[in-house]
Length: 193
Ligand code: GDP
Image: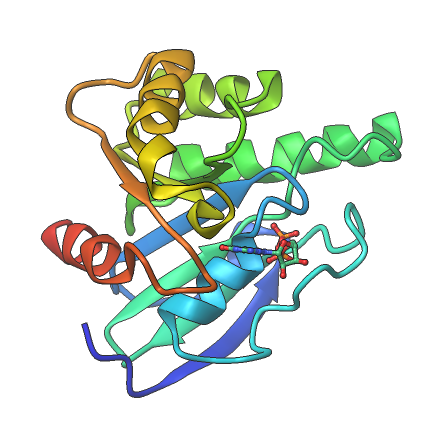
């Protein structure tokens, strides 16, 4: 998809702050520092729209981006950051549970993982949570530029097996540096619209 417009429309914490539209929505989740902001910026051809490497654990809001006036990306705050207090962690859990269990506009979750390493325990928990609620998932294995091409298939296999990926879910190798996987990712997202 050719992105011609993208803007943040709201940072929400509660359902009454979610945008009141019927537009299809994709929620983006991932461990802090995995490359989620870079993924969003690459997909939207924007440099600094999603903040790259903002303090992990700081922004506990769901950031809604309106794209081409026809869909929303929802940036979910990153997880797995050690220095987050129990209270903050609980607030995060409540916020995402509310969102994922009640948002009818949600078409699929986009879970960002690091292709270089097997998905972490937190990644597996996030994926299991999404599967528990029967939410279709697109797994983005990013930072592909950091490993040699010859090892890509091996790393994809580890990613697929560690997550115990459902056969209906998608796995896309990605790089925010080179744009690898961008067209494929858009094609898959559009198939949900
Ligand atoms: P976030 O915390 O998940 O939003 O992660 P960021 O997008 O801020 O990325 C964390 C770090 O990884 C930054 O230094 C990025 O420049 C780097 N990064 C993200 N994606 C890629 C990628 O595809 N390739 C490479 N080489 N670096 C990346």
